[in-house]
Length: 359
Image (cartoon, rainbow, N blue to C red; front, side, top):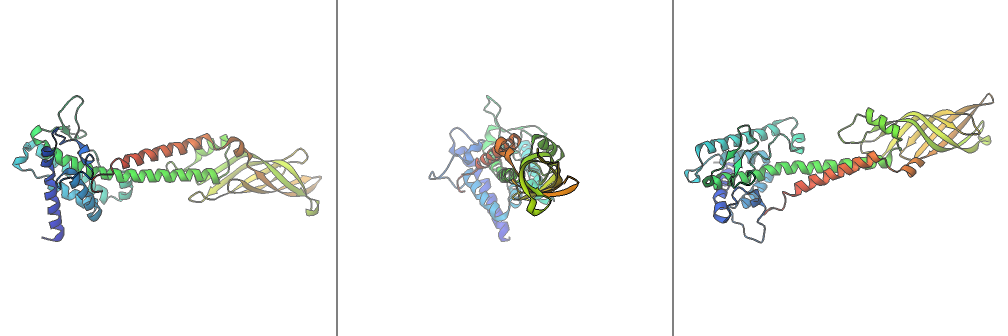
């Protein structure tokens, strides 16, 4: 027998020893209560065959040997019942059937080309398959509520064997869910950072631009666009223009960017854009030109206009005063708030499974 096989047998023996301990320790028979995994904590002594101890050992095994390997060992070890377990044959067969389904789901996830995405989303596995449940106002426990075959009532005499294993399996499957929840929380917080960077580093959008870009944008789920349109975008600007450099004079204008495009880098820390521009003032004719944008506030343009049958040239720089008055768009603030709440919920759900004995 190889070292890995001996290790697997030792794990199986430890696992099978956990179930009877539940009935011996608990005067209120909490055999089917998943809180048994978290209700005991140091410095209270925890027996080596207690489910909380077994579960802590399995966590270390998962870190050392991998999740899939431990699940396969569990499916083999927990499918065997002794006569002293007092498990009816039909219940034992149903338990083995669900063990096989669990193992096949895990194997399918780890064999998939989308393995990382499935694990990151806690998808592809019924993580509540072995969670014991109890109908309202009832003392009777049952397993496999969500199965096509319907729930399996757990006979009282068989609770230590059936529920003892189910509770440990619940904890192991919950680890799969927690890993995904932590990834979900991290991904949502990354999206919060992206939206905040988008707000800081891209030009302010007017309501009609927000509507246009919301309709036309194609982007990853819940992420800000890496490019958006400018349309009929007015701003206050200063212009320096004249026929020759020594004749140039400065004056205030309204800059109108008729249509343009803004692009950002992947992390939205920088943006740049280009738009078709006109400037208007009481003392000057309408000009035409191009506006270049760099970040949220800096916009420099080059314009030309016809004055008394001669061409006059100028440069313009606009100011983003709309942001100072209106602040960040309500839509953007709402997105950031919703993503932050989602990240907090996912983090809390993942943290709820932590702090068990032996961790």
